[in-house]
Figure 1 (cartoon, one colour):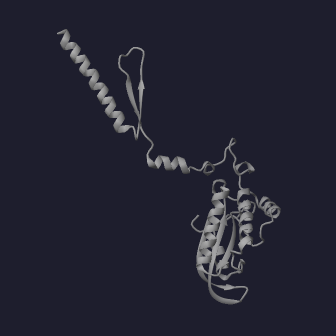
Figure 2 (cartoon, rainbow, N blue to C red; figure 1 turned 135 degrees about the vertical axis):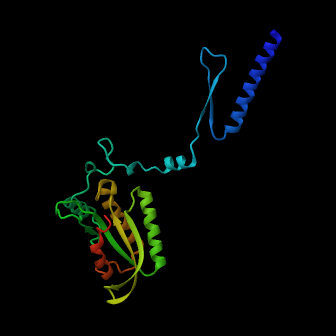
Figure 3 (cartoon, rainbow, N blue to C red; figure 1 turned 180 degrees about the vertical axis):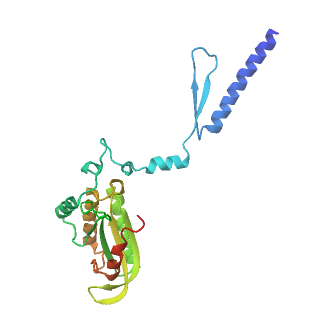
Length: 228
């Protein structure tokens, strides 16, 4: 009887060790096996920790801490988490010396004291390929400086070039700046506008026909608040 009990005890111990080794070998690539040894136990208790899925890794890797609304402890955009007023925008744009062709789009409501909605500029290019290169440059500029454009839209429209006074197809890029989490413009938007001007002045990406008086640009001003 004693011999049988010893054999059963040894067999159970070996089986437990084999099972633990099997679990560890099959899960070592995807899970962490921890052995916890309590004081009043002869055998360790094993706990498997769930590994991070690929979606979890992507979420942690690309999570943007500035995508949350500012708090008292975290105010990445300044101005206490509030959008810049019209006077603040004028002061900031004058101090930054941004191009006069950036247009401040007012708020959609009837209150004249409401903060501006967008900062926008239209760039016109000699060809679609030139417009695509310009959009790529803006993407890199945004990524390097850690602040994104609200929208960058490349399109081909029928319009009138004020330089030649001819109606023709015009390739344009509409660049809109806005910090969505504060509900309006921030100092980061003004800074990005200044950097965009510097990038354009460096290699002439605008194509020489960059003014806000294009016919199709005027027609779209009334549609700024649609879908809101």
